[in-house]
Structures are given as C-alpha cells and as structure tokens.
Amino acid sequence: TIEEDECRRRRWPTDKRTILVAISDNKGKECSVQVTEDEKVSTVKELVSERLNIPANQQRLLYKGKALADEHRLSDYSIGPEAKLNLVIRPVGDRTGASGTAASGSSSSGSHGGVWHMVFTILARHFSPADAAKVHEQLIKDYERSLRQLSLDDIERLAGRLLHPDGESMDTSYMD
Image (cartoon, rainbow, N blue to C red; front, side, top):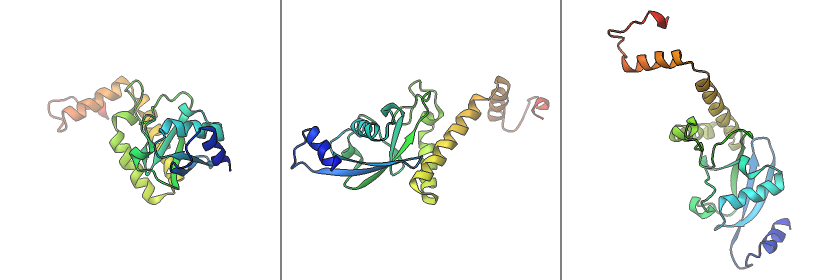
C-alpha cells in the first residue's frame, strides 16, 4: 500500500508500532497517513501536503476539538490507531499559528483561545466534526472582521459603558 511504501521510504523500523490517521478537511477532502506515535504534528502536515496539495503552513489540525501544535508529537495528544483528525484550511493571508495564536499576538483567536475551544466543543455536540470545524472557523472570521470594523468612536463608547456601567456622571447623549 501507499502507507507501507511511505514507511519504507522514511526507513521506519518494521517492528515499530505505526498508526493510521484519517484526516478530513472542511471542504470534503480526505486522506489517510500512516505514522508512528512519536511523529511530530509538522510531519503529519507534510504528508497531508503531499497528498492533498495543501501547503503545511495553511493547515490547522484538530483532534477532539483541540488544535495541534507543530512541535508536539502525536503521543502528546494520546492520538492512537485509527484516529480521526480534522483539517481546517487557513486562507493564505492568515498568520495564525498551529496552536491557534497569532504570530503578532493580536488575533482574537489567540487572546480568547479558551472561549473558542469551548465554542468548538459545543458545536461538536451538534454537528459532524467537519461541519463543526467549518462553523467554528466562520465564527472566528466573523468575530475578527467585526473587531476590525470598529471605529475609535465605537471603542470609546464601549470603554465608557464598561468603565461606567451605571451611566453615572457621564454624557450619554451620543450613545443613541
């Protein structure tokens, strides 16, 4: 099989336990890769890149709703035989890293990772993993777009409401 050829090409010992990982993306593409539990997530991304022609830097792999960091090994996430991973494809301009945090540190997905993880967990209860990943990705995009569209006046009004929740001694005529 292709997976066995891949193992031979990588010169993996035949006695070392290998696992078959099924990967499906948010556009319906699927592939399987055979790797060892000690392989890094970045290696899995390279194999997916070869099979699905999706650059590794545009891939975000999820396992049970959790984003996988490139530098971690599959065993760090207790990924075993016949595991299913979800692949979210990031747009070319998106600089979000594998762990969900932005390289610049300004992305809302990085500063609210716990919230986004909780949202994904809830979505996963009601949708298939692929659909949950699509909805999750769209929610994050919509949220970030909304933040980018805020004017300084909008931010000032929001800050005023947060700092003065009772509206005491504050001119609120401009809020209407």
